[in-house]
Structure formats: structure tokens, C-alpha cells
Length: 391
Ligand code: FDA
Image (cartoon, rainbow, N blue to C red; front, side):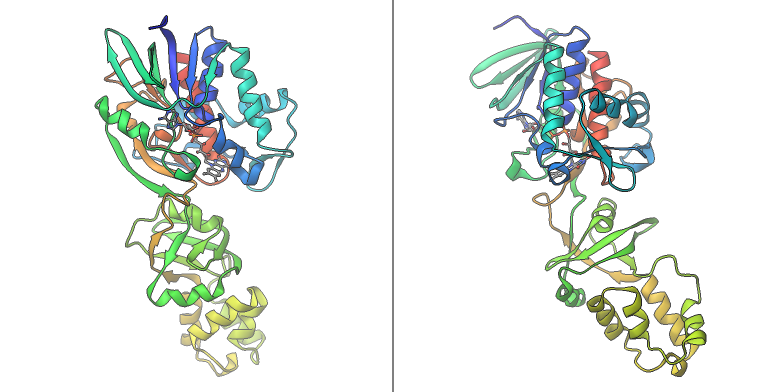
């Protein structure tokens, strides 16, 4: 057995690389073990290859967790601005696309190169093609079996992410390890994932490819972004966002004409009595969508022939059009996995397990899931940085 490391970090993704770089720069002897042939593979495919690396509006209320307060400490100490300063220090050009989402002008490769450079600067070693299969703890040391070798360290950091997109090599190893060490795991579920439609709603699949800016609503949560009809159901940013809050059996409602004042259809009847509902919808929505909604509302004829009550009913339906998803496209298509290692088991300041000193968990492996738009990387950076301060 070789000389123990100060810390072994399992997983060379966003959180693991950030943690290794900072801990190394703080003088710790650090080793990252990554099972894929290269580090940061999810970063490389993120944001359509341009990596939406953070969000300027990062705030704890944009994260889902059994404990909504858990993310506050790390997010407030390592902020989006601090990460942006690092990006700029590496000369990486960036732009804000929309809603505070920051992307590389060039390529996500620049973010991976930056993290690897920071690791090198701290002397942190990153070994790829190492599939960790066993970890144990005895006499104050963690020992790791990997590729037939045993390595040891005073601290072990679980940074193996979540199981979404298994074809990228994602695993549920973090949960296995957490359970082995007696830590609870909040049921993992696909999140930021397209929803599928069945039953009556199947007819909407004919709209495959049509997108519109809507409000997607699930319970008390509402997102104003684009929704996209697909051959399997519903997708697009508004739906991906709402999917993180959706549970099987829940309804998703869509406001197809968000922002309209109450009574707008009665008002249209007054100002354009000879218009039809179909024409009114066509003015505001893509043709195929407008036609489908008009068909389903079944209100033909000029507005002036329609009683106000019928207009009110149509208006109410358009503002809360109910869909009953019969499922989601699952982990194979989910951008992240929500749930994970219970935050009740961890210190929010250091990410260390309360009952296993020296064991840490960071990034997506933990039950903290961000909205779409750079929030998940920011959590990876912030939680990785927080753990590195304590290693
Ligand atoms: P991450 O998954 O990055 O890293 C975990 C690492 O552990 C992997 O490299 C894996 O190979 C390794 N590993 C697993 N098991 C192992 C084992 N047994 N032994 C050794 N290594 C092991 N977020 C965002 O904020 N902006 C965006 O633009 C996008 N875009 C995006 C696109 C797509 C297609 C996906 C799938 C996801 C995104 N995300 C995103 C989400 C983001 O990628 C994700 O939240 C972070 O990568 C999580 O960082 P982690 O370091 O926790 O896990």
C-alpha cells in the first residue's frame, strides 16, 4: 500500500475536479479517480457543447431538496460571480444567453481544460480509466480498491454524480457507497426530463415539433418558458423545469396565453365581434397548435354569437389546459437525477458526513437539484469548493 493521500476524490466530474483543484491549492495531497477515459465528460456535452457553466440568478430557492436551506451556505460562499472570475482569469470568452444563463462563446472543452489546469496548479493527480468498486474505513483511513490496487486516504469524497444518462457512463455508485456507510438516500428520480403523454392527450403528439412560449404549472410551481410537443409527449425548457416538481399521477397544466388579463376574450368579442376563436388563437400561437386547441374547444362561429359564459370557459381552459403525463422519458433522457444522499446526513458547511468523519459528498450525488440553466454546475462548483475548505 502506498503512502496515504490526504483525500481521495471519487469521480472526476464537475464537483470532483473543483474540489481536487482547491484542496490541492490548499496544500493537500489529493487523488481523483475517474472511471471514464477522460475527466469531465458531462461538462463536454453540456449546454449543447458550450457548457452553461453557471447562472447569475443563483439562489437557494432555485434548488430542490428535502431541506431547502441546505444549499445556502455553500452557494453563498462560492458564488456564480466567483466562478465567473475564474473563467475570466483563464481568458475564456462567455456570453449570457437568457435568464442569467452563462455559456462559453467557444467550447465546453475550455471549462474542462480550466479545471484540469487548476488541478495541476494544486498538484492534484487525476487518474482516468479507474473504476472504483470498493471502499472501506478502518483506523481513521479510507481504503479504495480500484483496478486491482489498494489506495488509502484520510478523507474520502463521493463525487460520482447521479445515474442520469447511463450511456455516458453515469452510475448510482454514490448511493451504494452512502448506504454502505450508513447514510440515508432520498429516492433518486429523473429530473429535467421530458414527460410522456398517453390516453386522450396522445392526440397532441400530432403536434410533434411545435413549440410555444407558455406557462407550465404543477401545483404551486409555474415556469414561463418554451414548451415543445414531441412524438412522445412534452419537452422544452418549461416542461423540463416542471418535471423536477412533477410526481406520477400529478397533472401538468399549461397556460397557452400567459399574461392575458382576466376577461380578455370578452374584450376581444367587443373589439372584434366578427372574429372567431380559431383566428384569435392563430394570431397568438403557431398555426398547428392554434388549430388543435380550437378543435378541442369546439367553439366555432363568430365571437359575437358566443355567450360570455362560453368565452369565459374557453379562456379558463386556455389558461389551465390540463395534461396528465403517464410518465417521463426516464434516466436515459434526464439531464439530472433529483434526490440522492440525504442532506440530513451532511454538514451544510463542509459536506462532511456527520456520522462518518472524513467522508464527504458533493455535487449531484447529494439531494440538491438545481433548475435548468447552469444551476446544477454552480452547485457542483460550490459544494466542491466547500468540501475542499475542510479537507
Ligand atoms: P458528474 O456526472 O459531472 O461527474 C461524476 C463523475 O464520476 C463522472 O465523470 C463519472 O464517470 C464518475 N464516476 C461514476 N461512477 C464512478 C466510479 N464507480 N468510479 C470512478 N468514477 C466514477 N448542468 C448545468 O448546470 N448546465 C448545463 O449546461 C448542463 N447541461 C447538461 C447536459 C446534459 C446532456 C446532461 C446529462 C447534464 C447537464 N447538466 C448541466 C447537469 C450537469 O452535467 C451535472 O449536474 C453535473 O455534471 C454534476 O456534476 P458532478 O460532478 O456531481 O457529477
